[in-house]
Image: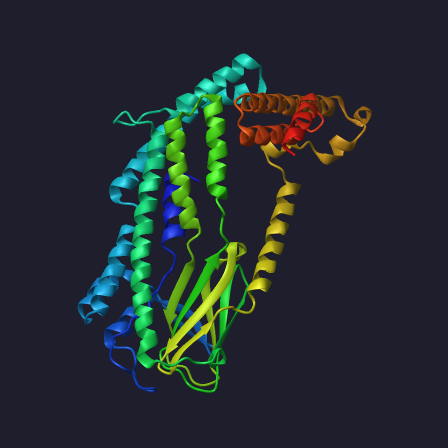
Length: 438
């Protein structure tokens, strides 16, 4: 994935999920009346939905650009809330200047990698001099400068952080207005309905999530439905991973403390974004009693593995109902896990170059060396030498961390030594040193 696509993708995925909003005025509504005003109906129609109701397809394409015009036809406080939400969404994506700068960074980084990558690869396979050269080449790539003399890697981190923090602030603004709007909807009828008036479940017939709804014994006019998916907390893992990579970079001499600090701030913003709940809201046509509804949610099946809890709320002319748990989520997650395991098994059957380097083919690893051809024996010996070379470097980093009394980094590198060459002398030394951390 390109640097540009990666940076923009973080903002889009984490900060701009499909949040569609239920709007209300302060006027009371009677059951059976058109409880949504004209501007509200326009607003919801512009938000879009892809559903099947009693076998009939209802498909509306989202047109968020229509929000400003719809807001002009609305009364306060609805007008101000639509405008605030629209403005917040406008601030989420990268600006044109940011996109151009990211493109420039990408081109410069590609040129640096093309010029230096050969030395980096050589250093991974051959002795100390080549390793030192590889370290210097890696530092050269880290320190390539832009037109203003700023290291482009650090600048890329700064850009990501700027976009994420701006997006997080915009998301908070949108969420605040959403809370005010949904509170107004709840006050409009002042009634709480039992969940079986419009009961929902979740299934996964394809590669995305599907919601199934069943209306109870009473008809519902223009129900507004909101699904909220609460993610499992990452618990600081992203920040910790950044700390490890920064430690490696500083240990290799290719990153300084300022670079590490910049990466830490970025990883904190990324983790905050990753922990935000995902929400989607849509409006449906009038529904008769007993109606069955199917709604396709644009959420990949694999993404449900990060979901801890699902909640669903519905606002109608009859009142509000809420499901704090949605049946079927566990089954969807089991299906996602099964698909993931199948993909992993297929990937293991077709190992890439790095996997081949660290995991020799099982048939060769378990065979008697005398049964292998000369070429196979030579290839196996080369793989073993490469593994031991990497293990020796990790052991060296571990000893440096021990000398610096950095227990976290020492433990990481000792475990890394064992992973890279379990049967090597370096691994035996690492196991002995690792006992003090158990």
